[in-house]
Length: 149
Image (cartoon, helix red, strand yellow):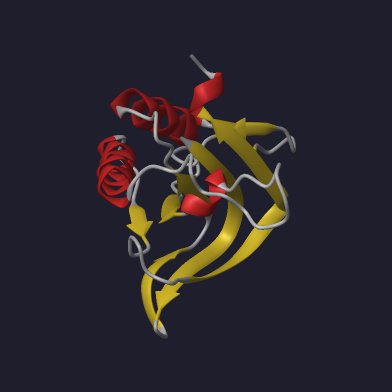
């Protein structure tokens, strides 16, 4: 699984002009699921993201997690994180998981974030979404569970 994690002061996702997920201070997570991904990948990323210390303490050091600051997570599925442009200019998405499997692992990730005690809003799987955010810092972290094992 791949995740783009952005520290935000606020973020929201809309479908057809209707806001379906909104958070204040916290993390926007764009999550892509690959063909080879399993529940272990979802568990790894959920645990890593829930504990990621990218919020500043009083001394200005990144020492606090989203839980420490009583923030929230907005998780948005994004299969395009598996876009491969090594051949030509149009991305190939052959490495992305099929929608049925991707939905299962995305929902598993969201459940694990919530089980960690974090408020977690979501977009709508397999819908055209508009994501708005204010990246705080900016701070953006790339995670790939395939590089963890």
